[in-house]
Structure formats: structure tokens, C-alpha cells
Image (cartoon, rainbow, N blue to C red; front, side, top):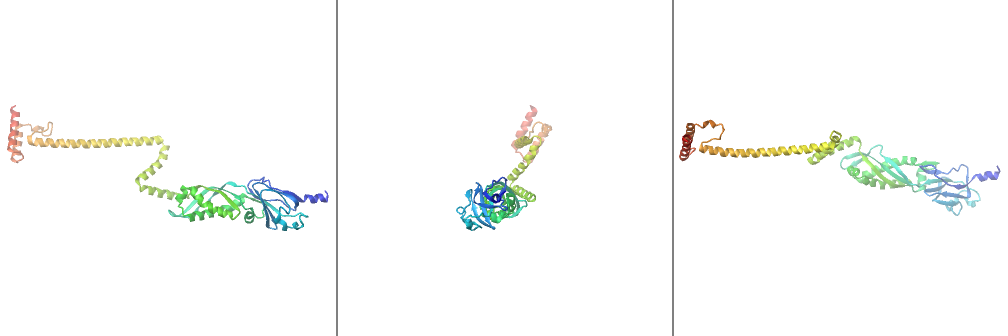
Length: 356
């Protein structure tokens, strides 16, 4: 191999990144001892950004496109080594490629409960889970704050740092919003909107842009959830109608698992209603009959007191003896319970019945 061929192979003609590995956010071009050839080509594909770094400082940033590396296309790099010779010599510089694609479907969650203040319950420890998506928006800031000089920087690396940022931001934004836990749990979109704005600001400090953020579920630790359920039950018991609805709602799943299921509940309710109606009707009839019998008895007693007669089959049926009847009438007259005329009329009637 000739010396000219050896020197030629030390020069880089094309710089590009094909992104053949998923999940890579930053990739450093393998320079080794090679140098960039004067007039070489830089290819930056869509969803990519290229950054030239010289002696630890960012010299220039390139958006998607194809560039010839000359002093006309790289005016910012004119102070680099050998560039003052108008590319009469090759130059060396670290080149980093960054993926600006949106990283979708990234999961977040609170491994440990977050403690926040709540107007209803005082202090509450809650857990939450959801999805978010982001992308590299400022490659220069991202390189300076996160990826640095590493040859390869993946989304797993960045998300390890984002996890703490998300949880800290969530605790601050929810705590300062003064939205009650019950409102957040009932409206997860409200909770997501409370966090998204603050989180976007926090990620912007690292050159990242938050694309989406949503909350899939909000829950309490088991012991707090049990206490909340008990409090809800007691609160509902204050309203008998609501408490009955609560008890019925709890009983339906149990009854559905038993023989007869929900149909059995309906049959039981229908039978109970029918029996209740029959009992009420029977009670009403009994009361009405009792009143009627009482009135009839009172009227009969009043008549018998005057006439001296008694109901057939009554307990005084044995008093049909005329002498006993007359004696009874005489006693009533002596006690002034009947008048002389009444006595004479009743006496005449007894004697008439006796003579026939």
C-alpha cells in the first residue's frame, strides 16, 4: 500500500447516521484517528440533528439536509484547527448525531406513594400511573446537560433521570393546585393538565420537549383506601335512602353469584311486596269489621235494655222465663232506669207472648 493511499484512507468523506438501533437518542461518529476531508459531505436525515464539537465546545448545529464542509457552509467553524488555512489541510472534530423523533408510549409511575396536602383528608399518599411522550428539541442543551461525551446515549439513560423529575414535578404541581384528591381521581384529565405544564418547563431545561402526558389511574395505598371506603359508608348511612342504595349495590354481586342470581332478587322483592300488600289489606279489613261489630253490638244492647229482649243464642238465652223477665223489668223500674209507661208496655208484651 502506497503512502498516498494510506493518507487518503485516513480522511472521512461522508458523515452520516442510519439509526440502525432503536432507542438511541445520541450517537458519536467514530472518529478514532481519522480526520474530516476538506469538501467532505455531511448527511443529516429527517428527524436528526448533527452537532460539531471542538475541544469540548459546541461549534455548530446542523438541521436535516446535505452539507459540503467548506468555509462557505461552516462559517462558525472558521476558527477550528487548520481552517485558517482555507481547508488546505484536513481537520478533526467530534461529530454527534441526535434523534429528534418523538419517543411515544413511555410509561411513568410512582413506585412509592407521593404525599400531598388535601382539603378533605388532610395528608394523602397517592399513587398514579400513565403514559408520556417526548423528543429532543435542543440538541445543544441536551448534549451539555445530559448526553455529554458518551459515544451512545439511549432513552433508557435519559428516562432514568426523568423518573425523578416527573415525580418531583407532580408532587409540586398537585400540591400547589389545591385540587382535592376526590376531584383528581374522578377527573384524570384535570390531574394531567395540572402536571403537564410544569413538567414541560422542567424538561425544557434539559433540551427536551414534552409532547403528551396523561394519567391512566390514581389510587391510594390499601390501608388508606380501606379508611376512605369506611368513611364513605358512614357518610351514606346518614341518608337512609342513600345507605339503602349502597347496601343494595354491595349485595347485587353476591346475590348474582348465588342460585337464582339477579332474577332471584327480583322474585324476592316481588314476593315481599305482595305479602306486605296482603297483610296491609287484611289488617284494614279486620279493623273495619271490628268497628262494624262494635257499632252493631252497642245498638243491640241499647234496644235490649229498653225492651228487655236478648239476642238469640246469647249468654242470656236461658232468661226466656216470663217470671224472670217480669222480675227484671220490675228491678229496672225500681231503679228508675225505665219509666212506668215503658214498664207497662214491656209487661204487656211479655204477657201477650205468654198467652199467645
